[in-house]
Image 1 (cartoon, rainbow, N blue to C red):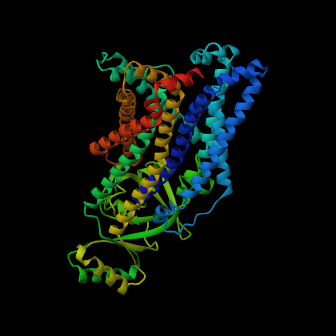
Image 2 (image 1 turned 90 degrees about the vertical axis):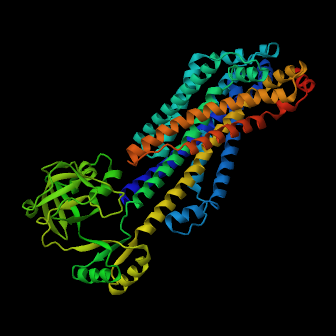
Image 3 (image 1 turned 60 degrees about the vertical axis):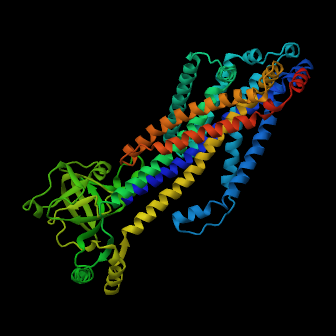
Length: 600
């Protein structure tokens, strides 16, 4: 159980880093939209400067500098907010590591964050800047932004895309601290974004195929999703990814807690008693029988060792494929045991045969399946371990599948009695005692045998549940940035089409439409975006959580309809709220004001 939990926590840590990168990239898309909106407001200025002799190269440098200064300001603000959060998060972290944490400002991570923020700004602002600075003086007499944006050449588009792709790959590999893991993550990110984009296009096409509604608000709201430069696909993709990430973590957390509860229902032992010496076995048994004669108890011999060789291949000369991941396992201290009877509970022999009474006198060993894979061992392999300087060699005769979550003593290597005869050993005991006698038994054992360590499975389960919950809180916090980035993109998209929306709302108001109608049009548009984002994100979260539970955590997966319903409602609500708040001037402004500003 400890091995499985540790690997799961490590993966959660990697997931936290991945969420940070995803939020950064989604924020980059928002930067591109904001820069595009900013440059759309400067097109007249660009055309005038072009008339006065300013080249596209000069204009590009000027507005690139402005964009980078805004990116630097945003990055500095992010570093400041990040440091401020260190005063809020330590209480969550202290519960995980049992250490007192004091907020300290570190310059290197701060500078790295600034570099990432500025690099992201640079990569994502290139394309909108290149398109904008090609504005010609004709702009002053003919205002057609859609045609102007098509003036950029194909090679400029390919160059911007190539620069963006290489820059993102370099940033992700740097964050992952491995080119291989970085490229795998980038591939997974591109596949997820591709699936989300295709799903959003499918739903938008489906909406287009639906019959026209008789309601003017519904008809206009739906048509807004198909307007030029509406960014609906980008919004759905980013919001859907944020929903997918945060819901996946929540579903995995619920399944992990269900797994723990299921294991506790199997009546695991209440206590583990560690470091029982050979001459203390009888005293230990007498104390248990005296306090709780009805208690179920087992004594398991333990022998500590280190791996020396496999089939003559010394561990000192081991060829690692991934040294960081493999070295700890090869060089760790292995705790062995031996038994003459059948395999222990929740140990299934999947290859080879378990020894019988006759073969128990031979030097044989049974390996857990994951250990066999890591050691590249098979039936018939010769395994040599070092026990206090003495090499002990045994033949691998079986491979087992072990349920590490049963809260019982489990081993990578189980030997036949003949292999470890005469080896120095201690014992670990498991005791299943009524709840009312737990403390009495613990005090009696510690008083009679002070060297023994008592571990309560109840405390272990509580610690695991607390750890999972606290980690999930941190992951939810990071996932919230992904959601916020999606909403930022939604706001940027609204800003990029703000002038067109203002003109259209002014015309509708002149034709007799009230604010309620305009609000309904916008509400239907944003609600549709929220519904599609939620449906796609929830569907992908279901698939991803199933894959995590089946292939990474290797446990049961459950459908959580209540959680999905809450996620759907929340996604639609925040999308509509963000959209309406970003469009208040479209709803409130008088037609005359809008038309005057448009003329100016």
